Amino acid sequence: EKGGFEHFMLKEIFEQPKSVKDSMRGRISAEKGQIMLGGLREYLDKLTQAQRIIILGCGTSWHAGLVAEYIFEEYARIPVEVEYASEFRYRNPVINPEDIVIAISQSGETADTLAAIELAKSKGAVIFGVCNVVGASIPRATHAGAYTHAGPEIGVASTKAFTAQVTVLSMMAIVAAKSRGTISDKVYRELLTAFEDIPVKIQQALNSNAQIKYIADIFKDARNFLYLGRGYNFPVALEGALKLKEISYIHAEGYPAAEMKHGPIALIDEEMPVVFIATKDSSYEKIVSNIQEVRARKGRVIAVVTEGDQLIKQMAEFVIEIPATHEALTPILAVIPLQLLSYYIAVMRGCNVDQPRNLAKSVTVE
Ligand code: M6R
Image (cartoon, rainbow, N blue to C red; front, side, top):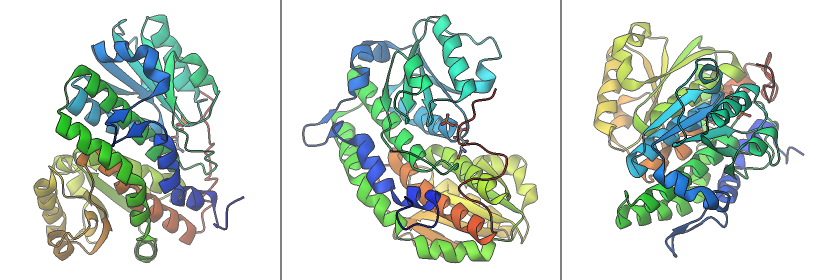
């Protein structure tokens, strides 16, 4: 059942070219210039007219929500707030009937997310679900939604669910942008083509497997890790850190790279591995100077870069290449090496990767 892989997590990481393709299947056609999310059709007007979007989730699903914030705001021009379901539900939030709530959950059973949905519903908001498990409690509690269709995820660490969530949320954002008229035809078409090319590029990103294993061996005994990214890749930094924490029990923190100088820079010494997501996008120059700041303090830099990058190769101790794509879709590729890095470090430390201590696959307690 593990398909020849040693763990479910590794199997699920390697399934991503297919699972992401499945999450787009029948929903997108660059040739026809179309994105269609059947489950949203009845509520498309609501989405188009939304005054605000509130995104709810926990853990990795919350990270997917953060990526969605960037793409919804950039292209659909709808203000977005991303909230931990557990904080939202206990703080008497302001919710209006013109708000759309998007609840994200792989399992569809997370207690806090479900309770937050019920609260928002009672205040009149329209609730969309982005869930993986068909027929689970959360999709049943929502008005509309889109399944991620990633297939069963068994490993406690969420991998293919995350890339599928980001794919579906990004499609939603582009659907909203198109119907609001806030995206140019040119960018719309570029994005559609970029979506269609993503599965092949995930496959290419997976080709760094052996090199990532090599890097894992060098850093497996580290006591701390820092993950830094900017823009669309800031949530990827958070996700990389969470993956490492939960399965290898190494303390890791994710930060927006620019925040480093407001505190975390004090942590950097010759023993601190710093993982940068430093792809060639709109914040490239800025992240290059953040890498220099870490190097100047002798931090050990591992950088996820765009294929062919020469500059960062000279600065970082290790680089891991991923293919170029549209900036908005880079998180789907950039997270792949981070999943593998945490996986190999955990295996080398003898940890139970599929069932880490103290954790359950779905958190049905509050
Ligand atoms: O099933 P959900 O997506 O609602 O689960 C949310 C979190 O419990 C989950 O993402 C958790 O953080 C994972 N173990 C992360 O890998």
